[in-house]
Length: 59
Image (cartoon, rainbow, N blue to C red; front, top):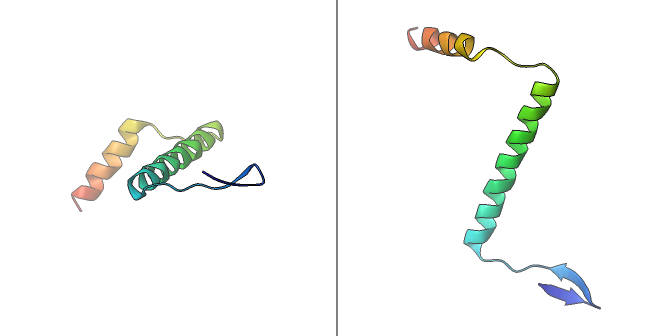
């Protein structure tokens, strides 16, 4: 961490850790979106979705 006048101003991080952090943030965003959809009632029965996917696979 780089500080200026006692305040954090920048963080130096290796590429692998940065990429892991980005992957984690992306997953958290997907989970948050899913939670919002559940709260809004935008859900479907899993068996209905699977049936539709199987139908599309046979087209």
